[in-house]
Image 1 (tube, rainbow, N blue to C red):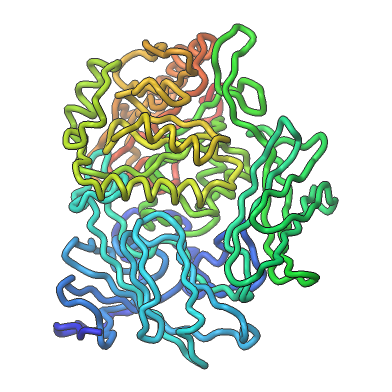
Image 2: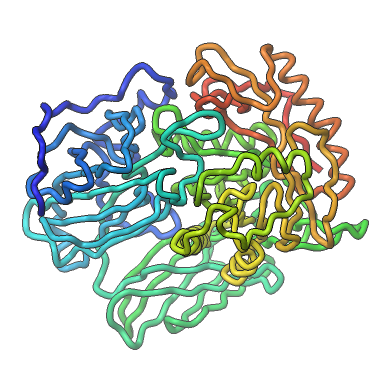
Length: 602
């Protein structure tokens, strides 16, 4: 490893960076128990070790390479990104820099003889990991979980882990969503480094690597398959499904196949009744259970069909249910991508329901597994955006022209024009899109995949939509949310901000939805990120804001439901940095609409 070639500053002890907007949960953080909840609700084992908390950190130039000796600049609170106040650092990581993390750990003695997995919920963007000076692996992509088997690199007693991170943000055309090094308007502070839970887990030599649970409502069954690590030619899975303490289905099947579990007259998952079955999956070798995980599932179906008037609609459990959603950026003033506590994470989901919405469009961000778990529990449908990337957004092509000519289509196979001229950029998008689908597949709440938003890095949308549908035929695909529709996919999707809401043209034989509207801005003194204000229609008084919001729902949204609109997405749930167009302030302390001013339903 190459020595860090510069003089070290004195090491600063961790404390939150003061002076900015904070949520009430920031004061509840215990540095000895940071986000202590089990991070993977869909695949639970009883033994694990949380590595969140204080780590040492350092920043070097990229050309300085690796560290022979870790000489820290200070302490950082994992898993909060270095740009956040809760990290204790709050400074941008530039594209010519590397961020280094270091800490030690000791394993419980009862883990002896097992394989040890090191898990990362998400690290933005390129992560390299060393255990006791030995390189164990690299991962690229800022939003998805990854793991390394570190067993052979461990020693008795104290072990050292070092992680290096490089993040090019919007300079290197990565999939980055709304992150930018120059935040303002609809683009926000960049997020770099570890931003989800880091943890260790002991597993047997032969273990369950992953599983899939697919509901089949029409046949009243669940389909279960398992992937495994390690040796074994006679492996089988045994699966039990529970309604509370009552077993409602069980079965056994060889690994590599699909187990069909019949559940007669199943209880259905829906926004109004989010019932979840508990699931236990065991991996058997001969007559011995070698591994076991706990999970859950929901019986629900997302499909397309005609209502009683013959109009094509999005169906949930074979019924047309109007989905009124809210656009959700998933940003926090103190933690940026990372909620300060699990209670804070749950708050946003619960607030969505309290405001009368039954759907959330998770906008150009993939959340931690626990956010989707809360949506599953509380009954919030999720439309999941893929992370955007490529070259910087062309404001004329992606904003001004579509407002004037909303029916316009671009040739998204002209890669240079859409900012995807580099093949590696297109390849990386597809790699990360597949990762997103795989890691979120089991969550019942997810109803829609949205590969592209407003032509931000959009390319080959027709082919991508077809490919996504092959990967997951159980969900809808909105191939191009907003405009530049390629007349494919499951939905005709439009964004409308400055005009009266109306039925779009050129729908074809597809359901249609207004997938962004509103954006009404109300700045609340004492709860602002900065003095700048961004919104699509500005108000200065709460009463006027509430009245305009109510009239928008009653006079424009509600009549369109009868005209065949399947869904509508209001912009947005929270203020975010300069954007003051949320229904709640950025610090989550002031809800801008009172009782009686809530979402419409069918």
